[in-house]
Picture 1 (tube, one colour):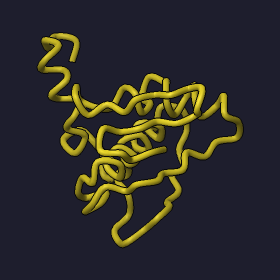
Picture 2 (picture 1 turned 90 degrees about the vertical axis):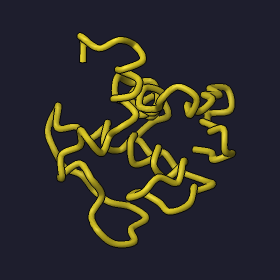
Picture 3 (picture 1 turned 120 degrees about the vertical axis):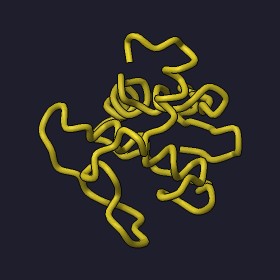
Picture 4 (picture 1 turned 60 degrees about the vertical axis):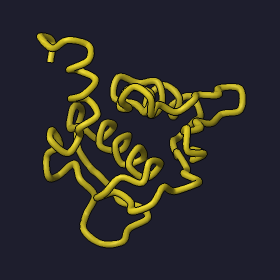
Length: 118
């Protein structure tokens, strides 16, 4: 990835299905929630961010239509913000240019261009 141009890296970053391991994908079926257990570096945060991205944008195999409201649940708001939203593998980092949500920290929410809110 380090050898790619910015445009190439942006393209590759937006293609999670190419990079994801099978254990980082949601289980088959019509699930609203799923649990991932793993140690440090297992890819839990990236998998969760990609799942939320897929729900918000209506991307198969995560969703067939965009989901309007998404809950981001963590022990504290600071944990959600530092890891799930602003972290290295968080929601602000996994989107390709043009599909990124607007982070509104004072309102404690992310808003995607299509109106989805987390």
